[in-house]
Image (tube, rainbow, N blue to C red; front, side, top):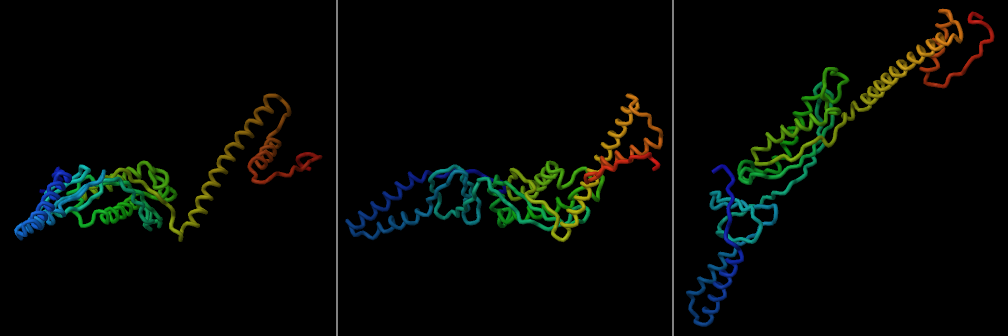
Length: 284
């Protein structure tokens, strides 16, 4: 037997009536007749009492008799079974697991801090009870192992790996899907279903965080400057074309170069430009 077997035990209400009748009738007859034989009825009713148990909604009880798995009770209610059964309670509710922030190296070797949020529930009570020692601890350890493996498969970003299309920071959908698949395979041995798995925390480790922040800022500045220059060139080109088409002024190559230089300075400067009035010619 290596699979879950659902069972339906006797109603606890019926057995409660039987045990109560046995106890009180034996006690009454013992008092009335003084016959010690009816002490046996009282003892039997006391022995039967540990067989009573109840199952809450979205809970279960795994029944074992002297090392032999007898089944799992998933139906909620009040029941009675053999009093020698060991009844282990296993919750079937969905649970959240927010892992600790683990320090690992990404694909290119950068130290990062990463944590995972996992939503899981027990689907196979036999595996959860007998395939692993402690299924809750198993979830914690395997989640940690899955996060470490995931971090080594992707770079944090594509600064050092320009060919990386998926990164931990930008490719969250693909990364979370890969994490969920990995955890599902790892936790299946314990009869656990992964409902959702996603990265809950992601950051560079403290020793390189400041350097990486400056690098990101520099990249952003370069990208912004590129856009500014690209727009400035377009504006200068448009200005020269309009002046030429409208015949506002006839510019030779030297004047065009000076105009282009001045316009580029004005459009690309990161500070306000102070104009200088030239009352002479370009050469004086």
